[in-house]
Amino acid sequence: MKDYIIINPLDNVAVCLREHKAGEVIEGVTLLQAVPRAHKVALRDIKKGENIIKYGCPIGHATADIVTGEWVHTHNVATNLDDVITYKYEPEYPPVLGYKDTKRTVDVYERKNGQYGVRNELWIVQTVGCISGNAHRIIQEFKKRHDASDIDGVFTFNHPFGCSQMGGDLDMTRTILTDMTIHPNAGGVLVLGLGCEENQMPKFIETLEKLGYDKERTRFLVSQETEDEIEDGVKLLEELYEKMRYDKRVTRPLSVLKIGLKCGGSDGMSGITANPLLGRLSDFLSINGATTCLGEVPEMFGAEQLLMARAKDQATFDEIVKLINDFKIYFKNHHQVIYDNPSPGNKAGGITTLEDKSLGCTQKGGASKVNGVIEMGGLIKEKGLNLISTPGNDLCACTTLAAAGVQMVLFTTGRGTPFGTFVPTMKIATNTDLATKKSNWIDYNAGDLVDKKDMDQLLEDFIDLVCDVASGKKQAKNEQNEFREISIFKDGVML
Image (cartoon, rainbow, N blue to C red; front, top):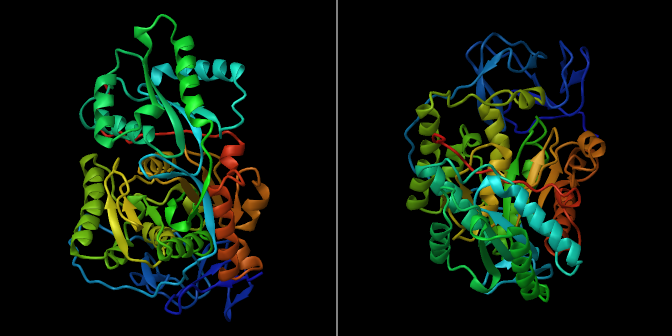
């Protein structure tokens, strides 16, 4: 196992890949203090006000003189970032590593509208949070009568939205839920309402009409309008089940894949192992005509200009600028500090500033051109790498990614998290300790990159796993644990 890494020759810090004691030597430098794993140590004297360089880029400035061998972290470093800024389109396209794969395929479900699902599940989508109990009762009763082992499961997704909302919040709730209703991972959907909520069924159906939903695979039930919503709900699930139970997987090229890219509970290893792995995968998929989506806009702050330089054209650049500045304005409108990040867990894991976090986070997008920008609640339109408007919040971001049409989410983590959204949510550990300790949460160990494998070996192994999960040969750990949740972005008042 490697003891440390200098990520870029320009860096004035090294990252410890294990806990180091005072007196140990790194790159000819004697450590003055103990340095935790994934934290940084100064390779030379750094004067107060001078930039700390990691990934070949500034991640902040020294708030005091730092001497060679000293631990470099929040006690002596601060961000350089400040407020909304003006950007200029200066295209720069780095080399993209990857190859055209003519052998690998995936087995998926082809839907009437030409979309492809990696699961064939029966869903209840709730228009409002107060009928979650009804939805679960309907599913329980359905399962008493039907084995349903010939489909991939019957699920509903609790949420607290759809009532006491107005304006943009109500529109966003309806948009995300209608996006879910047409998702290709669902072979059939029962939309279940209460009747008196703000998110009224007629408007919901009107929105679905604009999306061109499959009327043969969708049913609607308003609980207040029926004497026995449980029995009526079961009958509607039975109708859908009979239509979808004979669906079969078909073999298709990798180009049918749409993958969401997310990180959470990051640590100092995230930008060294798991996020670069996802970046290589994203580039591989782009080369093979597939689609990836990178969200977490607040965690692009500080690295956004690297993404802007990869915009395919001026129009896409302008959309990225709007994506970034709109989120900054959102922070300012709520009187919050734009750069109040990273989280306490990130800092404990070795991430010092938002630039440090962002430069690691955005590596999930690889080196490919940015072909599309998706507003929150919007659907994927472009192949290749897309940026999508989401907050950093894990569950809200993953829900938004899935609603855009990704069939699965790849989620890197250095500290661990068990959740999953309404599509398979694979967890990729940044370090072997986490992968070993939380094997019930973690699907793949990118910590092998510093333990025993090179990136090319790791990538080939990881591609195989992603294809197996997409093809239904394996389940993601969140599916095995039956962890499926959603959260919807909220900005306004509650009635």
